[in-house]
Length: 399
Ligand code: ADP
Image 1: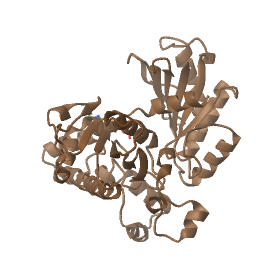
Image 2 (image 1 turned 120 degrees about the vertical axis):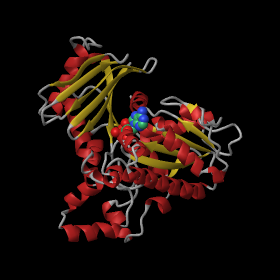
Image 3 (image 1 turned 135 degrees about the vertical axis):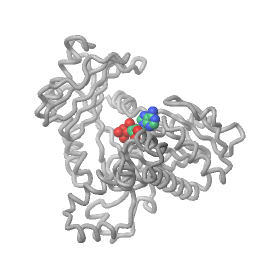
């Protein structure tokens, strides 16, 4: 059975074709600058690059889909004879509100809900809808499609964790609350962590998962279920990310809007695109550039790095209190899987909990590895995430 996984952004469309017999990637690729000048990359499962940033006219998501279809069924990148070999399509949908605590088959009701939740995720949900509509136009209405929500796994959070101290009506009228994101990633790595702890059902475990990428979030899990997470109503909350500020005093927002005469959209841009590691360092949002600048003695790159570590350690301390202790901590995503310096620094910052880093094991990149010593009071693991596989598995289960 082959499943096509789609992750649609406002000007992009990422895809992976996964053969579920053996869970192998058959082909994957990316349509970028959709609606601008169109760039197309297509690779085979073994990593062979068929084309890279090829200029292709893609005025909208439907034409992008047509390009994906062409790449999968013709030429050097051909992996299937025709689209009928694809059994189902799984879509990453960012915001599923309070309604969806799991993945669902897409029907009219689901589409309506995703459309309603556009107010909560104005940058993301419209793009997800475009992806679904374009898939329907390309594949027809017969093929089953599934929505896998970023927010779903965090729906187990209790009210005390997901509400803010605003008038309660804003929650009931507008759905203002913490939803959390990266749910598929936290779910994937926490399940593996529970297995590594010898408790596959998660019962009796206290885990903190650290998804550290361009966008980053932590989740605290008790008995395998999320009890708190750092991202909020939007992915802006939490600690310093590549270009996002993370949590700040909310009054700073109104102050700056008044001082600088910024519209809500402009202020949103400042906090989402010009802040975080980029905003503080003035160098880059990319961790590799930040570390290089730090090594050259750039004080602001070092400040950005130190601020992020400090903020993450404060969240971890808070979550240890909320969990009543800690059994394991997991690092995942681009930075979490590769950045051994950050992992070492964070684990050393947790030595008060009896955490003991295994410096040799910590040299690992991108594979499952325990990085604490056998006598460490808390175990730490690197566990590579695979959000596409979560989407494919859920899609298979639902059809
Ligand atoms: P997203 O999916 O949110 O776009 P990723 O999970 O791919 O982000 O993470 C991107 C981040 O991971 C970048 O800051 C990048 O510098 C960092 N990263 C990727 N590979 C490495 C590496 N080998 N060493 C250090 N950092 C890395």
